[in-house]
Length: 295
Image (cartoon, rainbow, N blue to C red; front, side, top):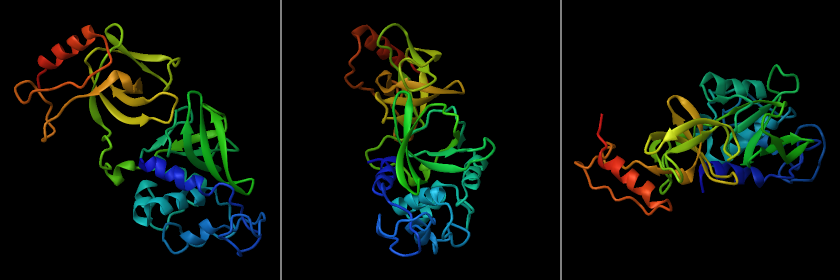
């Protein structure tokens, strides 16, 4: 299970939790239900130093997001993942979004999010006023788990580009390292074409999205993320300073040595894995690798 899936799993386990009328029965999902913003999430964060003081009886959507990361990864990792300073003001949505923006980890409202991203909404168009966790992405919409939604934790969905979206924050997943058996991001891959000599890089992770680049067969590209929760598995790719999406089936890793140097025929014999592509394409790719040079 990826870290993103772990966060979503913890958030999902809280679905149906209702805020309380008083500071009693906080751990019971339904008992003492009310509309006074008393929740266990604020209580659990009181002594962590993640927030600048007690947050009892205040709007708690951002507190729920912080609590979910805290519950999933612990205090130290949650702080790094969410870019929180000591005793942060992230109980406020706009401040929480500002931390992402300060670190260059914010995404515009028109972007396609990935699971585990934090989405921010605005009721006035000027600042973030509500937030939640992206739990699922399909070909035209994304799903969220949100605290303080009609006084409880609920699932919602939104079409891409919904006018309520203020932006997204991408947690710093790199602080967790790479779990054993999981591929590292920012790896170089080679494009392989099923038909013709180019691969389409698209604006969004689905086959009908606009094409923003046609990449020649055998071109190295950098994979910086994946959108595996969509209907089809897509890689987020950087190519010539542009970022777009390519189907996973059109990418294979560029092999490296233990010293992270690109493999050439003089360094090491490369054995390509079986590929479900035409033989002519396979032979072209084989020839490209055989003639590759470093530098």
